[in-house]
Amino acid sequence: MKLILAVVQDQDSNRLSQALMENNFRSTKLASTGGFLRAGNTTFMIGTDDIRVDKALQVIKDSCKSRDQLVAPVSPMGGNADSYVPYPVEVQVGGATVFVLPVENFMQF
Ligand code: 2BA
Picture 1 (spheres, rainbow, N blue to C red):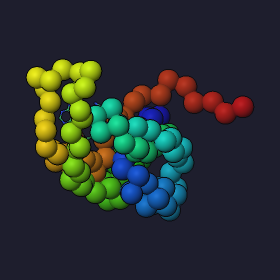
Picture 2 (cartoon, helix red, strand yellow):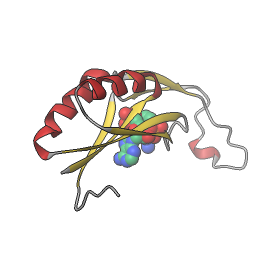
Picture 3 (tube, protein in one colour):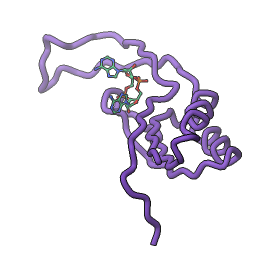
């Protein structure tokens, strides 16, 4: 068994939830925050048999888009002025950031 952790943009989270359900995957959604943009995103926990991992990854790929996002400059007040960028910077976010972890035990009580 594997645990898939997928960090996706909030805009894609309903579509992904729906697609996972339609393909008989069980999932848990966690509200999360990206360390860089400090904006909300959604982390899915998906526990699945090894043979279904590729299918789950395909569902995630099909449901999540990458988007460009502007990062507002952060004031140097109290910080390091050397690294201050006075204009917004564009970064490409997503589609999805995915980790696949081995599961030692799966229990439900
Ligand atoms: P954030 O940390 O808010 O990052 C949003 C986007 O900002 C990233 O998109 C990337 O394009 C850019 N970015 C992040 N750190 C950067 C840096 N030090 N310098 C320049 N640009 C940077 P993605 O790579 O698609 O990541 C989307 C979200 O996935 C991240 O949101 C974070 O929540 C999660 N994530 C990405 N890599 C991760 C990792 N190695 N471990 C845990 N979470 C990760």
